[in-house]
Amino acid sequence: MPAARDWTAVARIAGPLAILSVGIFMVARTWRTWPDVMVDFGREAYLAWQLASGRTLYVDVAHFSGPLSPYLNALWFRLFGPGVLVLALVNLVVAAGFTAMLYALVARMAGRLAATAACIFFVAVFACGQYVRIGNYNWVCPYSHELTHGIVLATAALVCLGRYHDTRRTLWVALAGFASGLLVLTKVEALLAGGLAIGVGMVLTLVVERPGPRRVLRLTGAFLGAAAVPLGLTIVWFAPVMPLERIVAWPLGHWLVATRPELVGADFYRKGLGVDDVAGNLGNLAIATGWYGAVVTAVIVIAMLLGRVGRGRIPLVLAAFAIAAVAGHQFGVAWLTHGARPLPLVGALVVGGALVELVRARAAPERAAAATLRAAFAVFALVLLAKLGLYTHVHHYGFALTAPAAVLLVACMVGWLPDAVARWGGDGAVARAAGLGLVAAALVAHVAFMNRYIDAKTYRVGEGRDAIFADDRGRPIERLLAEIETRVGRDETLLVFPEGVMLNFLTRRANPTPYYLFDRTSRQLWGDDTMVRALAARPADWLVLFERGAMAPRATRLHDWIRAHYQPVWRQETPQFRSGGGAIGVQLMQRSG
Image (tube, helix red, strand yellow):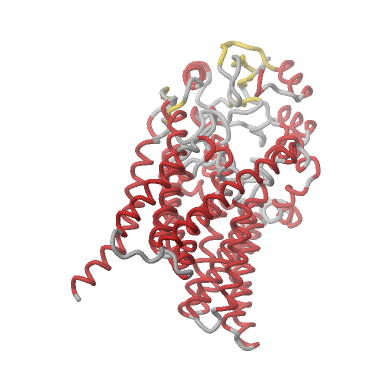
């Protein structure tokens, strides 16, 4: 009996230890390569630095997402000082907490082995991944903290609902409500997906519990009251500097930006949704779904034929794992380009299966609670994929939007499918080993592909806690930083056009205007006239101008104003920042007169 207890204790810690080991390896392998040297993450660091220095979001610094993440990051800068590494280390803690919540959820829904495999897949593929030239699409230095923070908050709310199933304490419903209120202050994708998932979770929780009217009112009041607390604090925070209608429009109503037709119809978002080539993407989805169906069918048939094998079972299990891993590895790059396409269908099947299980298990509280969480989490994963439309993928925004659905897929292959095979009279262990082999093949393919981008980052940019490693773009940026340090005084201001606010942060030279990004989206939001007036009202002492190529300014009025008020003092050629290709020009310019 003591030996059995010891083995149970080992089994409980083996999974978390394996996840931790993979996490440590991935962090060490990708150390300081997480952000991009110029694009996106500079905004995250710059906003936190400016807010920590006393500027106010939406007033002194433009922003079109919720206020929670910038102010939270500003808090870390206040406590520990500004630095890229500060945000990275904090985000590692956030990612670890998210992984722990994933483990708890999946273990409850599909078992500890499935939870271990799902979390290892998340840590290796999503948390530290890089599948395009630009960095930022990982959980350590994300292009948008609002997205990762929102996903964490939504998951935390579902964990709280799970705890309520266990304890029936109203406090857990209130905590779920508080997390939901914070969710409003993040990003529209997380808000929409998380809000629907939490709503489904609350409704199904009430269906399972079947409380009386007084209990329903108490739970609803606790949830809504707690959710109102972050929103009320937001109004109090911004009230001294903003009228109420502006608070409602931006800190609380930032998500309305996503409904603007000029943004929704932009080519960039159409391509991201896959609607630029509907027929092609539907065809690829059908092919990928066919392959998934063939693989799953083969696993089920083989496991059913073997039945409940007694002797020689271990060799069969090992053979199933090896064959699945080798066969899956042959797909190689196909895992990267097409492997995630069927995830919306997987999410829909999981929702349907969870609802069926809920109906069957209403008399079994533990099974009903697991089915409730499975349905709510699957809704969350499914709605997150909506932004990817017909082209669900791991790279780019997929590092966050695809992660919960990928976790569900791993849970299905390692947990639910083998359990179903065992109920049907097949060999569940063989099916589970085959599922693990396929997951391992996909994981290896992703990490091997990622290595080419990590290995290319050999140039060190920045010093101390700001040091990062970049690809060939790092060398000219390091020269540009040296010129800025030599020519621009510590108290002088700097503007980078049309993008590259990372330069402001790395040199600690502030931009005196509210606008730090002059891409098409920003210009559609604020307007060229407004931006020109801001530049004229508080002109920067110095300006960095990127000229041709992917970063070429398309705003003629803004470009003409810059040419009229600044003169170049230094120039060099530098590689393209977004899409490769030939060199572009960069000028350091000083204000005339």
